[in-house]
Each structure stands twice: as C-alpha cells, then as structure tokens.
Amino acid sequence: MIDTDRLTLRPAVDADRDAIAAMNAHPRVGEWLGGVRDRAESDAFVDRVMAHEAEHGFGFWAVVERRPEARVVGMTGIWWTPPEVGLGRVVEIGWRFLPEAWGQGYATEAAKAALAHGFETLGLPEIIAFTARTNLASQSVMRRIGMSHDAARDFDHPSLAEDHPLRPHVVYVARP
Image (tube, rainbow, N blue to C red):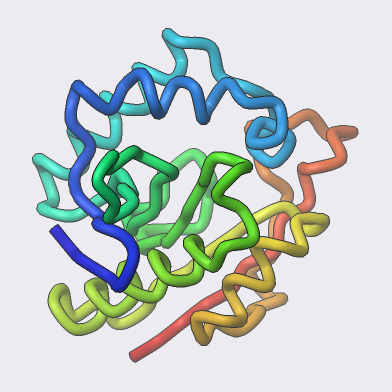
C-alpha cells in the first residue's frame, strides 16, 4: 500500500470489482479507452491486473479516497506494457478515474506516488506513459509528474481501427 495526502493506492481485490466495472462502463471514461467495457471485459481486466501484481509484485492499483467511506475513485500504477502494443519490454504508468474525481488533482497525486515507487523502490531505469494524441488532460498529468514527450516513440495503437480517432498515440518518458 502507498498512502498520499488524500489517497491510498493498493492492489485491487475482488470486492473492488463493482466499483471498477462502474468506472470502466462510464461513457466519459470510455471516451479515452476506445469504448466502454461491459462487466465481463472489466472483470477480465481486473483478473489481468491481479495476475500482474501476483507475478511481479507491482501493478495497476485501486485508488481509494482516504475518507470514512473509503471508496474506490480510480486506478493508477505501473506495469509491464502489453506486448501487443509493440513498445518492447518497458514499464508504463497509467491511470483512470471516475469523472466525479476529475479535476481534483487525484490523477497527479496518485501518479507521482506510483512513479516514485517505480524508481525508488523497484529501481526501474525508465517508465513510459502513452495516451491518445487528443487526450490533452492525460498529457498534462504526464508533464506535471515530470515526464517528457518522446516523439520518436509515438505510435498508432494496434487494437484500434485505422480510422479510429484515438489510434494516434503519444509517448512520454520519465527517468530517475
């Protein structure tokens, strides 16, 4: 577990599946993921997240508000980039949050903690982030946590159709 001023980052557990499914099914979240995820797709995602954590000891964590209700408001963390993306064996940082948590600095706060964990605890030499070229909000978070655009690594996301507006992706990088 990682605690920040307002959040706790921790491995996802089965009890988080409803909250994660609600987030993955939200149309505003789906805008940036190439579409919403139904419950089966969301559960498969949670299964992958949990398997990665079990195998590697780090992963994409549930983000819980540090309030009495302690609700899951998003996910953030670091994990090995899936091979199908085509970026090689590199660790990526990512995040997704419920829309009602947007604009409160949660993504930046959680991502800073995840990035620090990757460098200070795991000793990673580099962490990347990628998003759709049009996702300016995520790119702003990337810059706020100290990442720089690496245009040479920009790519078209292979899981999106050639004419899909989110297909062109930008890559940001951070090093200790």
